[in-house]
Image (cartoon, rainbow over all chains, first blue to last red; front, side, top):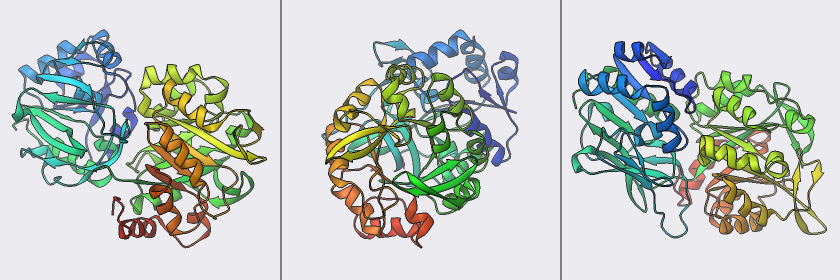
Length: 205
Length: 251
């Protein structure tokens, strides 16, 4: 059972639809018991770092997630702000402490002159380090919509980038934790492929 | 590098798809769910659904269609037409929309933009600017083109972005459905005035119109409706043409 975390942050219906489409047994839940029993965890997230992390904590979800992922090593996928929250700190309107599962900071993208923000649309991802969940996806277009990026402290945690004047973070990972900035549930066939890869992943990088 | 987007717009009225000219004379153009699936098969970048029945009559937006479409179409959707409150936005997002398009509400209740941007993030907020010319002067229109405001579209565009718009949908009423090209000067003025992506809509009639909107209008995305309903041009042909012209698009 894949637990999709329900903490009031954004469009979970598309994540659930995509998981159903690829044949996953998935459940939208905010119950710690479900998290502690899940074989895989997906954390969606849309909106602001601050309001998402605050909602996650106020629902009492940080502790069971930490236990299931960092102690039990169950595969975890964070999407968009669900990925950004993995960082040590979020720098959107002041400094907010994140989950700190991937050392680094989430900060605003600095656009080149004439470049638009938010970064919206399809962009090919460049995979820097091989990872089972990103297998077969190098150079394929994924859908992004964001103004912030997670910059990891450790180079080996940066798994993929895309080009927006300069390289911006597309995916990060550490152990059984994976985060993607783009939306696999909105990225057509290649996004579904990523979800299939996730379902098959044992959690070892 | 991020690719320029091609986004078909589907106008909805009481569960059917419709299309008109200059926001009037609407004809039935088919079933929206089936059309969405055809567009999906042609790998369009996003879809925009505008419920003009709700926009005009002040009734509730039809979200059932979105729920149906999102079951097996995995690309971003924007839903607009009749969205007037945080509650409407929450429902749109719940039913599968990634973004909401606010046009009348952006004029009548501007505080809604800040509230929505704060709660959901500006990337989910598309502000629609419906523009018509009165004595040569551009004016912002509301209620699906039926009411005129005294507002200048460029100034309003800046204000909408300041309040939280993540994208602007610049829709020229006078060119809508006429298939004589986009309103390039207006698109260019607004694209230059703001830092958010601008989606051009209204007037596409031939393949080169899309190229002009990007090259001269500075649009980050091009949207169209009539050309796909009433001619044999398709999103595939549009994208191949744009690629051939040197633009960065998904093919």
